[in-house]
Image 1 (cartoon, rainbow, N blue to C red):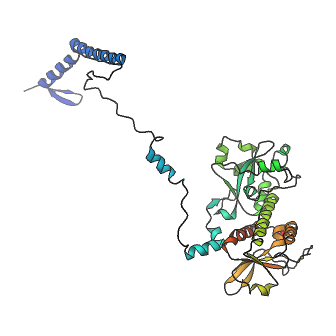
Image 2 (image 1 turned 60 degrees about the vertical axis):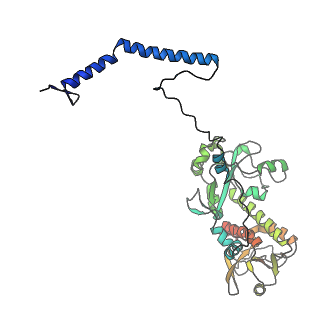
Image 3 (image 1 turned 90 degrees about the horizontal axis):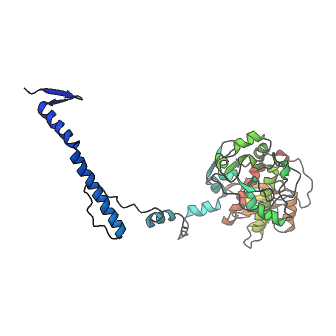
Length: 382
């Protein structure tokens, strides 16, 4: 019986043990190792000769040496990948054919467009709302100091600035106020588009909320700054400036933008805004979207009667279709803007005026509704 050995948990008989010992001995043989070394040296000599001659390799390469596979095409040079990336950057063609009935109603409905806006989060309250109900803020370098100022993007749309220099920014009184509209050079540099960052900053479009941010301490204000603004290397987060009078500044921008839109509609020959003789005359107008209460032409004093001055979110019953909003323009725009509107003449020389429910008036109706929402909680304005 053959003698069996147990090595590393494996059973071997005497014959297998002998074969294993002989194979190990051959591998350790000096002559075998010398032959392998000579083969490697001969291959290296052939390679050096090829490099010196600069000709194509004709030397024999051992079978046990694997050659490198060709490198894949770089993504920067791949035409298919570039076409896939640029496919969504090209402008899509305009829709052909007649719009559907739903599209026509949607374009003429300002409230549907407000609800269809992208949802964003308020940095102050954390509430998520359509972006129409929020104020969009960006960063703009100060034209004198170069420090980043957090300003509403309404500044770009309105292309206006304030004329008051009595307030000071939070934590940086030495920087001074922003330039006035009288300085064209600095105003143009300030009215540029805000610095494009990875994430924006949104605040609920209500004046008390904006005023609350101005009353925050510096450490609490820093908690409102988006995290990606803090990680942006173009500016320091602790240097961001918030205007102390931001609520008044935003209100002035929204008023001037609304005034500009109303003047534009009144100048069009399509009669988008029509004057009315009284509330009874409203029922005789067709396709109405909103009613404008202009007040008496020479009304310089305010009355406490809610029947004379419409309150916020006032409505007027219009035929059988329901109700349409009634906007108190003297309270929304202020006396200065109202005087400028009245100087244009019709249709702002009457007590009442109506806005037609058209596609071209949708933006103006949205701006009026947003301005009223911004001032609704401000009881002193009404």
